Length: 287
Ligand SMILES: Cc1cc2nc3c(=O)[nH]c(=O)nc-3n(C[C@H](O)[C@H](O)[C@H](O)COP(=O)(O)OP(=O)(O)OC[C@H]3O[C@@H](n4cnc5c(N)ncnc54)[C@H](O)[C@@H]3O)c2cc1C
Image (cartoon, rainbow, N blue to C red):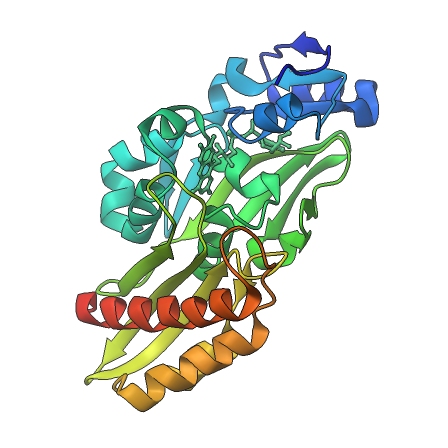
């Protein structure tokens, strides 16, 4: 329950943080809210020799609208997202998802950057970011690059982040006016990670689904974009047949682990149900 020894650094700029990461090498880790990293350190599953605390870098926290994009600094907390009128107005599914993460204590400290950079299949934001077509700004000693959320996740705790790189911001294209959305999450109790969860963003035209994106949380080693499931509902009025086809297509790509949240078949089954519920609720909200 007690972490191993580590050195603590508190840079005041992204440039200083990136320099520290480069100088200190693989034994250095960024520290954001600490609500994933510190428990791992207490269990000795992570033993970094250096923690680079990002809280001293003022420019990393905040929410801005830039044209058709909402740009969120990596150190913006889940609580900041919930308090933001811009998020509630422009990307309401992000508000809905943040509210389903843990409890107020965790949400006050936990950051969106830490959530998406962590690479834990149980984190809720990654599948949502894929659903929304978001991209991540990564800054390192050799410059800045933009990586789409769909290309970021490579395996459990493996991401496109190169050693020495920092994720500094997340850009989300604002979904179409009148879009419908829902994040459905099955969990064993309040504050738990998802047994299975699905994010849906869609538009309707003339009572039929015109566009649709579906993301899945904790149903594989990485978050998933369920493209065939989305295709199965486009052009339909979301009748029972279309919903079942979408659930079946989504279940076909799920490879969850059997763990304390249930055996594989159960988690796939409830994953399909989350997809159907999210589609129905999103359609009800679409204008
Ligand atoms: C009781 C409890 C319940 C929880 N339930 C949920 C849940 O239901 N859903 C959910 O999604 N999460 C859940 N969490 C996790 C929580 O949301 C974390 O806050 C989040 O996963 C990580 O964000 P953080 O800011 O705390 O990051 P940290 O723990 O500080 O960092 C996580 C990892 O990301 C790296 N990192 C952090 N920031 C950056 C950056 N800017 N650039 C590069 N690397 C970075 C760190 O080095 C570390 O490896 C729960 C946590 C607790 C304690």
